[in-house]
Length: 289
Image 1 (cartoon, helix red, strand yellow):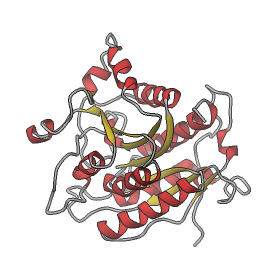
Image 2 (cartoon, one colour):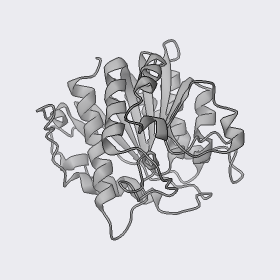
Image 3 (spheres, helix red, strand yellow):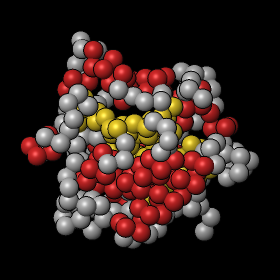
């Protein structure tokens, strides 16, 4: 069966050779996941994307015309093989000067994508920005160091990291975060406090890889996640962060994960699809080239 294309974009705009953006679905969910269903997330987002308007009102633009190709998914069933394949395919996209959008599955799929970014920018500078409700700094979880709760442990070994939107962690994880490199959700949502943004932006290097767990959003907007945490970011706040990163640095790639579809509520699927479209719009209308 032919792979469905994000936004139901027809050729030539979905042709892999000319598309500037390539979406890589990774419908992976580890055996240690407490709540099941994130492996259905990529398909649900791609299906929902066929029903969104790709024209962007704010920029009066149609960035999809730069080309968006949705590639064949990574179907490996073990975390080791999955991350090896994700790393290889992401690195290949970066070498071809494509904008990779890795679409999970659980957030563990970002381990391979971050490895690829670190390999590609090994002689340059790179910051990993994590937008997530959780710190994800466990050394191992459920007997595996490739669990999604271990994501940023791997990232810390490969590049500079910044956490944003965080509101859940263990006491042990708190000791592992370098001073000044975490921006809590309550500070971000405090409308009277904008000083955090200056501090955040000053820590970015020229190249940024962004990993987003959709539970960074408040559960009122994004209930379809495995581990929801109250007090999350609102839509405008998330877009503001992404927009400011885009103005300050080069967004080299992004990983969006964590959607756990709800059978009788498809609204979160559309929110996730809209987020992808917004990121692509930012990248190709106002980003640093």
